[in-house]
Length: 335
Ligand SMILES: NC(=O)c1ccc[n+]([C@@H]2O[C@H](COP(=O)([O-])OP(=O)(O)OC[C@H]3O[C@@H](n4cnc5c(N)ncnc54)[C@H](OP(=O)(O)O)[C@@H]3O)[C@@H](O)[C@H]2O)c1
Image 1 (cartoon, rainbow, N blue to C red):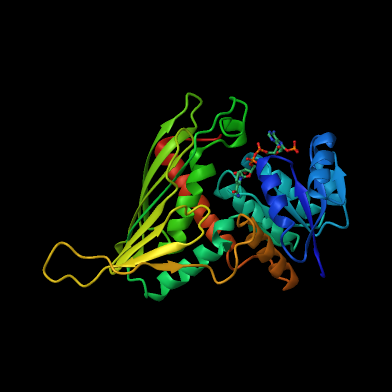
Image 2: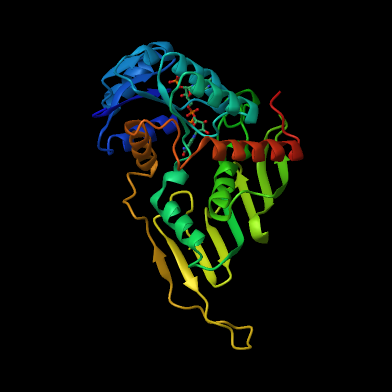
């Protein structure tokens, strides 16, 4: 595969962001876009330079120049969209969350296996150079043992009741849309979760608008995480370790992480911070960071892999199980 032909399925907000980053990735070309609305496909293709524009998803997946399809529809539709792609012989990168629940995500994995196709959740955070570097250095022990993590993400959403952000039929949920990021960050930095507890505020249609989560991770590390679609958060993350503190001003789009070591205590409660150390990625951030996941999919396809080691199916399923459990605790159900 000299260059990878991408098809973009749906022309909503994130599809535009993705297309902008795709143009920056060597060896990736935008082969086609598909939309329920032909005029939207045409406008998207003109804006981003797609070679073909289709007024249906079925036509998109039938295009022989498309190697891999990026699914950018609301979560409730991901499974059906992925099935369409696999049955047409396409590989799939599917937006997060992979599906509404673990059962649907597992079914998607089963379909990928049955058709021998690549499948990856678009959890671009796990492909982000700064996050990868921080994870590696934390795992090596050089930054001390992680004990406390806090991550918060939220932004007020102004949209009508039919928008996917508020419509339960489309999988609306602050947890599924936003909370998946602090949960993933904690999982990447601390390891597989042992216990999660949540409290939430629900809309009158029964979706979670705000959620606060506490988690326990291996070795007794603890995390507090929040997600909101009604308020603006700092987007910060902090990890307190046995030898210092790690700060990310925006863990969702980090330019860097900063480790501040603390000197050995000398019998005083006041411990002076040492010189901060910047942690940058080993590779450049491509565009907004979606480019790094696009490059990772290209690498996997060229190597004939069916899943990415950066976002393995089991990691995606582990997060889906966590979100199923949290939704049960706060009383949110899609059925
Ligand atoms: N990775 C990230 O940073 C990130 C950021 C935001 C969202 N996301 C994820 O990406 C997905 C899409 O989010 P978005 O914000 O781009 O949503 P959006 O702006 O509402 O766009 C969704 C698109 O899906 C298509 N669609 C098909 N059936 C639909 C239906 N019944 N109702 C509404 N839209 C339908 C439409 O495209 P056509 O009309 O062209 O077919 C629509 O434009 C979600 O799963 C979300 O969690 C990821």
